[in-house]
Structures are given as structure tokens and as C-alpha cells.
Length: 583
Image (cartoon, rainbow, N blue to C red):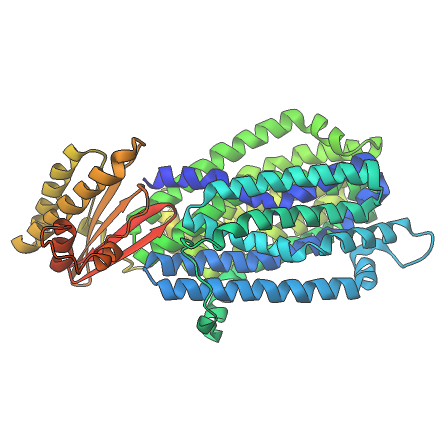
């Protein structure tokens, strides 16, 4: 089920990862084609500010993925609502402060970015200022869209995510065309078009959170300093990651301006814009890894974490390898969409082909660091982020750029990612005291997490016939681990009653469904987890609603199971029913 779940989440997460970059890509395309090299240079110089807001949104978004993933994984509804409420308040505060700061200090910001001084003949300065003023209007929706993504993934609202991204993209294209053909507001109009399109995505997404069946509730009584600190702490590695990218963009803009002037910066703007779409594939894989690793880690699910490492690496290589092949073949036509100036176009084509060679190692690095963030290896995640997104890449770009020119700057991306991947492998080798490429080695799980592998039983039910077999095998497992016959009987009975109930009612819609059964012996207790991909159904709450019925035979299976166990916990997350029974 983990591989299937990963695949289901992956498409929507890739599209969601494009939320931040699609409008930037569309703006880049329209600016390069219709507003000229000076406007494209201005857009490239403004990119660090855009990335700062993306970094702040990612800080909260990643904090939500980790914090909310853990509260959902352990069934802490109050903690989940506290996380939701605090994240909404943080996003609102950052949006207001950021909007005010950029509008107030636009001129000095433009100079700091490399647009030069504010003089009548400095066209690039005014074009940069105009774009920033248009874009910043959409900052609240820009950040809100980012934090809605993990909540909608956790709740299983994937279709709405896809609709929001499509509507945003179509809206931005239409508004950019209107700006070029009708309103003629230059770079300000391009930034404003992006702002409006972000609000379109926000409106579509926010409808879910206003529904009665939304699993996240605003409760301002739950706002506490410790919740805010935990949310920010869990998101810091992603903030470090994004700020490293900001610093890298700033450094390369300066370096390219020094080596070949505004044409090189324009070429880099195109590579960054299209490259960010390519990065959306690796970011999507890594974001799914972060969400799932946080949930599995909170559950102490060692086997699922090891499977996750293997699955994320597989998709990183296959998907990003395919993207690399496509871009290498189509680099020329793709760049032509953005640039008409021959000098800038030539640099962009060669640079893009060198840049995409970094995609596969980048996908592996990004997946590993997000996975490590999910299992609470925060320091390791931050170290990888700094070296991957700035340290190794900037050093290689500066050295090679000074030696062989602009192409050396583009090669810096490949060298930076490869050095980072080698660094991760060396660290894993040093920690394990042996060289191994298996998932267990790179999983780097702490000692004592969850139950030992030999103390776990896992199986899958896909039909009514499977239920009796799995129930008997679970009972035999309990006996083999020295548990009492009563415990084995209770485990088998719980599996039969709950799994048969799911097959009878959850499988009735004719779609393909399955039930994952897991028995774990840990810390002196026996835990039975039943996870299925049927429509949401909370047996614990259902029994509470019907406990006063006069008919003693009503819901007898669920009643019996709840009386046999010490504690029952139900969570609906990731589009899955998760029932945990503790004996």
C-alpha cells in the first residue's frame, strides 16, 4: 500500500510544487518574448525577493508537514488543530509584514539586488521596481497557497489541489496576454497577473477549509508559544534550504553580470524559471517523503520507513532521469519560447543542457534531506541543504566560471549536486562502519525505534477470503513470539471482525481496495494497526453515536472489539482509514 499511496500523492504534490514556480515560469516566458532583454534582466534580479517569500511560505509548510504529520500519526486531534491555527496566524502575520516592507523599501531593495542606482537612464532599475510592486500584492495568497498544500494532502483532497493549480496557471496565462496585448503595463502588469492568479488558487483551495467535514478546525484557544516554536523548529531546515537558494541566486547573478553582463543574467533567468519546473518533480518526490516519513516515524513504523527510502529513490531516478532526457532533446525549442536575443539564447541553450544533468542527483539529495527531516535528524538536513544549495554549488560555479567562463557557472550545478550526494554516502558509511547501498543503511533510524522486525507481522487483505487466512497467520505469529493464547485469539478476532466489516461495506463501491494489517509487539504491549483505502469511516466515533441503542445485537462486531482492547485510536489521513488497537 505504501508504493500505491506514494504514487497517488506524487502527481498532486508535483503539481502543488509547481504552484510557486508556474506563475514565475509564465511571467518569464511572456517577459522574455514580448518585453525584451532589459525586462528579463529585471525579472532575474527580482528573483531573490520572490524566493525569500517562497522560503517563508516553505518554512511554515514544512513545519506543518512534520508537526501535523506527527500529531495525525499518533491521533492527537487537539495537537493537529493547534498546528493548523498557529500556521494560519503565522502566514497572515508574515504576509502583512512582508507586503508592508517591500512596498516601503522598494527602491533600496532594487539597488541591493544589483539593479543599480535610481537614475533617469537606468531602465533596469525601474523595471525591477515595477515587477516587485506588482508581485508583492499577491504575497498573502502566495504564502497561503503554500501552507494549504500539506493540509490538503493529509486530508486526501488531491483533486481540489489539481484544480487550483490548473486554474492558477490558466488565469496567469490569460492575464499576461491581456497585459501584453491590451493593458500594456509592462513588468508591473506581469507581477500583478501573478498576484491575481495566486488569489484564484487560494479561493479554490480555501473552500475545503470552510466545509463542515474539514478535519482541521481553527481554535484560537489552542494558540501557544510552544506550538509556534515547534512548528517553526520543524520548518527551519526547509527555511535554511530556501535561503541557501536565495543566496545562490544572488551570488550567481553577480558573478554572471561580471563575466558576461546582462545577457548572461537573462540566460540564467530562463534556466532558473524552466529549471524550477524541472525541480518540481524532485520537490514533489521529496515532499511526499517528508509527509510520509513524519507520519511513519510518529508511529514507530520501521518497516514502512525502510520501504519509503527505497520507493523515493526509485522514483527520483526514474522520473528525473526521464525529465533529463526530454530536456536535453528539447532544450533549443524550449529556450526559444523565452528568448529572441541571439547572444542570450545561445548561452541559455548550452547552460540549460548542462544544468539538467544535475536533476537526478538533486532529486536523490532532496529526497534524503526531507526524509531525514521527517525522522527528526534536523541538523543533518540543514547541513545537506547548505552544501547542496549554496556551499558546493557556489564554490564550483565561482571556480569553474573564472576558469572557463559562463559554461563553468552552469557546470557548478552538476558538481554541487554530485559532491553533496557523495557527502551523504560518506556520512552513511561512517555511521554504519560499512559500505552499503541498501535502504536500511540510508534510512539511518535510531536504535529502539518502534518494534523489532522479528516482532512485527504484516499482511494485506484484498478480499473476504483473505480475512480468515490473515487472521489465522496473525494468531500463529503471536504464538511464535511467546504471547498467550488469549492474546492470539483476541488479535485474530479483532482482525476478522474489523476486516470483514471493511470488506462488506468499504469494498462495496466496486473500486480497487485493500487492507493492510500489522501486528507489533513493543514496550510490553501488543498493537494491531488496520489501514485501508476505503471511504472514511471512524468506528470509534460511530460506536459513541450508537451506544445508547436498545438493540444489544446492533453493531455487535465493533462493540465486541472495543471491549476487548485497552485503547482504540482512529485517524483519517492521506485518504486512508487508520485504526490502531492496543491490547
